[in-house]
Image (cartoon, rainbow, N blue to C red; front, side, top):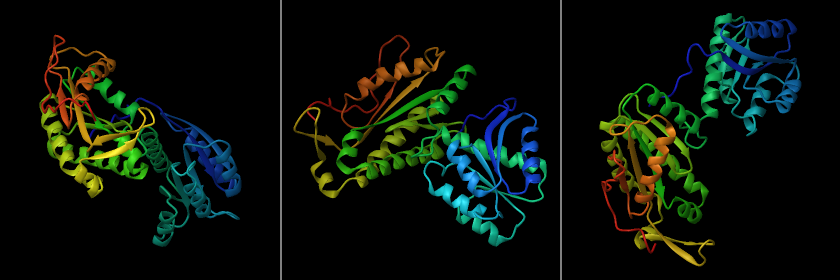
Length: 340
């Protein structure tokens, strides 16, 4: 799976908090970071763990450089508190330490430190580790928290780059049918497990049937995206559909499988409603027979295809082979989805 990279000419940036009890080292770190070439770092400092925590609560940074050995609240304690708080748990922490024994490194891993920098350090190593952690942080912020897959920003970036490069591509929009009913019936924990299963399935199929530049993204909820080449799009879609249909029953209770549906109370329609076993609708948009100049065009075509695909029972692959506005029939066509 490819992921958009930050161009080399783009200055690195981020808000960094240095928590260090030695005044001389605080000054050195601040200067080394602020003087870094091709970077614009906003650097703040705190002289101990307590003040560091106060500063983080006031204005959470993008990265923390944290001294391990400090009077009062040491670095291990500060790290443990931050990683235990959902509001700060994803802020990367680089430990600053004069100790480099295996025991110290293991202790750092126990409290979920992200990296180590041993005193005395080289400026190049400091900047390298800072850049890496900030890059990871940016990827996390732009990724779906549940699946870890690239989210809307990265999907848009990837698609725009391929359009600008004049590449022939296929955009697959994958959508689970009746997922909301499944979530209402089984609860969010099992719904989340199903979403993670779907993300894993897409990865596995891409490994076996995809290309090196293939991209997998998660729009949100039960909507996923794959960007691949036109010639690989249908084999990938059909493999996903086949494996999804084979494995989805593992996520249902035996009695629901025996009935062939789940029954959900519907506040919108009143009474109860039956929903079949989950299926997957896969829409394929390509620029082979049409010119695509903007990502919005892809979304418009996918929206039209989705109307037809959602009207069919069962899993379905909907390729768009038109250039004149005429839609083709789905690869697998079920009966009309009325009366569910």
